[in-house]
Length: 258
Length: 257
Image (cartoon, rainbow over all chains, first blue to last red; front, side, top):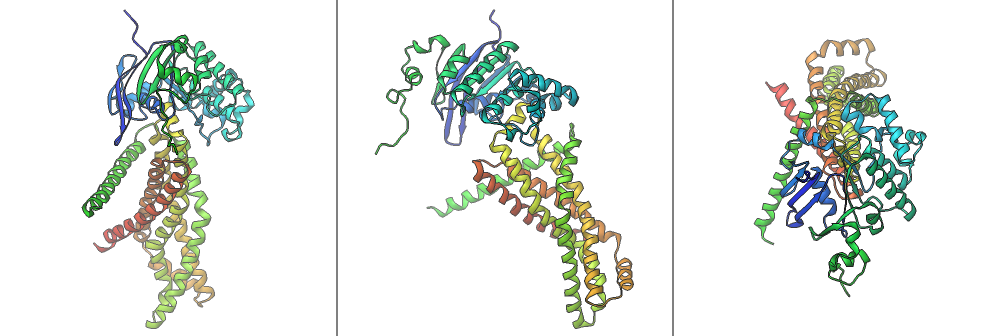
């Protein structure tokens, strides 16, 4: 018998008033896999992640985490489920009122009631994992560059050893070299922890590096799923256009022509 | 455009807003009483809401007491009642002006700051990040601010009362020619505990309004810098109006029965 998938989305819809953002998402992420969902801006990638985490409530459909239906969970039950998750936000979303190490140690101090001194040691250890020294821990997030903020965000996402890590556009806004550093860190940390990863991105270089499985989302639906190696040869015209970044093809950008 | 549609839409928006605020208030109040209670954060917020508002509130209270003494003297002299300056200053400050002026000043200072901070956290996904780190934003952000405001406001108003009465005393003795001992005597003889406590109860309610409206506006802000700006304005306007309305309501309950 196959193992229960870590995350299973069935026919998930999300509407904002008359605007239909997700139109029946079906997606399965197996344990230990690194799934990358590619797709253009405005296709519903971020909304999908937020629906899984419960930051948004899906209009209809099912979200299962470890085989457990989470859409009807109470606040308290959801807090328990969220302990399994770590997330790296697109803008890093560090708490600017706290020092860097307090950011990294946040889940340990608030969620697990760990004494501050011990949490601090773990935070410094996690910072070292993403290539930052202990004295960076004493700085405020505003004093860091974009790449360093992303690294701190990554350290914070993995500090409580989550089983599932989400990456929201991990390389957006970074130079190509820093982007590759972050990609490598993601690959290493996820492998290291044996965690399941779900990323969304429109950066193909990043997707190729992180993914072992890929899906493509278009107009609120998953239109293709397969192994990462197959993405170039899958024969799906939408995927093909996206992967090669061509303006001509079945995907029409809504740009008014003069 | 159909006039009924316009009116209907306005009513729907209004009812929606009332509903959202009620739900927010309920969640906020529940978060204030359910563990975990973050004492550290409450302390931090008390420092910001209470302690750092002291200069502003102290200065406004001083001048309010002073101007009150002046006007009562001028107005009272028409009926040969200028001797009552001390008594009326004491009542006016403790029952109404102390809490209301402190409330309005703190509304401008603190509810704006709360709305801006929480609004920025909202638009930069920091609130989402809190949730993913298994921390309830109501318990971590909203409850400490509300608890701190409800505790600090009465303390702040107690000080404002003293400084306000002192302002009246300074004007009374320095420019209106009252004897200091007589002025103090009149104040102490006339003022009753209920004058002070009614003002302190009011101020605790004002503290609740200030923190709640700051958090609510910030929490619901969206759309970047502009959204945060709008949230800040809304917080100050809404909390000021609610303070004045609640003040009228409480005065009519406390003093007309």
